[in-house]
Image (tube, rainbow, N blue to C red; front, side, top):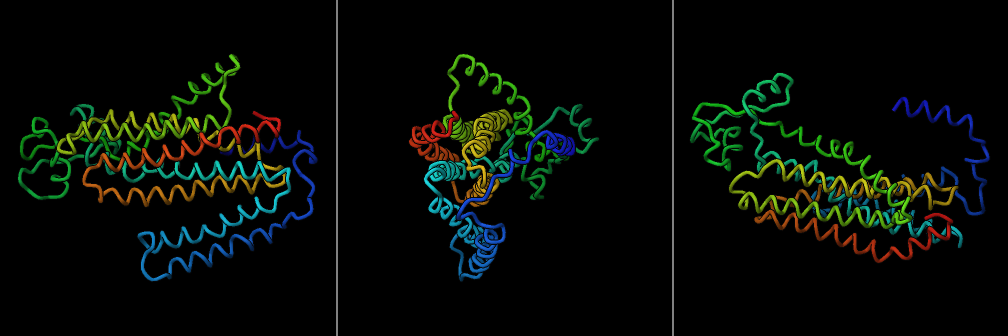
Length: 347
């Protein structure tokens, strides 16, 4: 990050001030007015959401967060309504994309909750003894001891659905891959798949067949939906959770959803920089991260429904349906989004 900041600072010396600072136009708001229309109402609505009797969305904090987002979302709708003819279509296009991205983040960020529960309780994590002892020295292994019919939580939790032939003798221990390490699978796939995907887009560009940025986002949403089907397959492979599933299922699911992320997340940021009216690029980038924030909260709320599904396949089918609904909405918007980009002289 420090290297990146230094590079940015050095690059600023070669950029003329007129290239980055746009003159104000009639109707433009000051920073103070923008904050008064977003920050203060956000706090007021958040407090009201927290104090409302009962729980509309499961918990007081859920209510507070979603209520707090209402005036901020309203502000971006206000920006669209008040924009001039030149800016209205690009702003509207970005708001439509943000709506689709909310669903993506809601599904994607379940890796920190529902998929971690899956790794902990339903994934075969046993390591070979020699390798497990070596890994344990650097704190990357978990040790569980089989205590037979004992109800000790640490023993019962892992052995309850382990295949009988893999259960050790009473009093013996197993070295397991720490559940936390499964959080590193997504970054691993990012590093591995990024150059491959960039090369693939470059190949299509040379063939003059590279899809537009909105099309890449739609592709990313479809791929994200497919990752949920991989986990539905994992449930089936576990014989409806009666035995543990192989780690390969989780690794494969992370691989598929990471490919969707790489088609979508950087493309979303690129779309903001391309379509935003120059004077409000920072505001519209804030809108992108607002969609990320709302998606993250919805991800936690969806993961909270995990225990309510007797058949866990239905949980992943729900995620598949949500991601596919967002993909269909994005596909229906493609012609309009591509036309807006062509009007801006980009594609």
